[in-house]
Image (cartoon, rainbow, N blue to C red; front, side, top):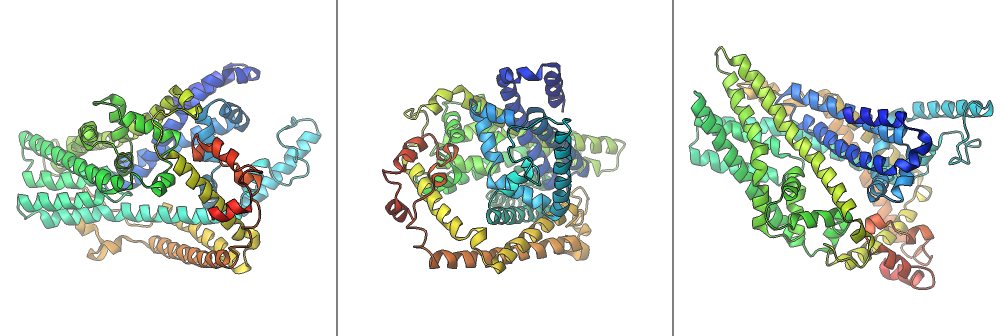
Length: 581
């Protein structure tokens, strides 16, 4: 918040007419702003996952994340503005990538998902807003906008027209996919804490060998599940170990916390090795996997350069422990990096795990009747908050580090002949992306909104409305509160079952998610039939210029050469389309 306020002050103290001369300053500010945006989003996600462990810290993380995101959106949208961002994007790769993200179907789908229930009201307000601006402009109270030539003939503002100009079928489908991801994440975050509490009760009377073996196996399986963060695993596992060891005096508590921290670090290293070698390494030569995750693009070339550094450097450590557990380990495998240096660089994860284990030890001490009970409770909140803060700050550092590295090696990225940490299969990846995007273009035209029958449109609209309602239901209260700090946590389960945690809103959320799946299934069945029945109809047509000019950010630096090869007069005829599709 302080950063945003300083930038606003600097802007209003300077002459706005000289803004084009301050592009470097604002480009640097935008890098920091989007790094903070990543940190705030990570904080909001963790606030949902960790609510059973501390409602106060969860609320603080959510509130600060929402406030920071809102201020950055205001800074980017109003203080900087779209016109200035377009100017900076011409000379700054960071801004070019940011604009690609903002114009992607994922962002537009998220907007549709959030605003669809209130879209009639927003449309009415937008029409009134546009009418008011027309009147003010006719009276000379509002300046002309050279970037909006359709101002007088349009009923809505250019922002609404920007969203309206997209293919409805694509945005509605994307909103449904995003809603299903939200529901899965919300359900995972709700049921993991009760499961771990039940596991602790079951393992309490068992021997050390059984406790460590089962805890290790369960933790490894959970690490392999992407929606579950490391902190959701460290907290319950350390609780089981510390309770088993004992925490009567300060010496026992310190020893128990140290044992739990080392054990959790061992779990993390084994899980990372499995993710790298069992999941990532088998796909190190897979064109499909590399194409799907864009491993030939600038960001991953930077990641490859950092992770390939000899020895243990601070940049390598920040990337290994700052990125989410699952993606970074699988990335190391796909990049075919040696295992031992990666494991050594992951050892500082110890300092991320330690605050969580200390907080659990203090939680157990706060359950004991003593004069320091309230003190231990306050210290638990402090160390738990520290355990949340460290990953969020590391996420910010990763975002800023990647941006700085891209700018530092700008010449290598602009030189198509540069081999600087370029993927050896980049030519094949780019060719596959060209072919896939042309196939997708043909399929999108066959299944576009204009080509759909009325019932397919109804299915898409109904599914999107259900998707939006399910997200709002997930945000209200789909599950009863579960306090992991309770000495007898299983007693909180209504009816003694984890299903008792689901509220009426939660059941509505799952029903709506099921409706979304049904609508998606109907649309997929129709689209499959449409493509099969018309697979030769559009293949005889030459692709439009929009289909030939593929985004260089998606294709990487080799796209210019391939785009030239696809130009009219060379291979841009129907025979190429037939061979690709």
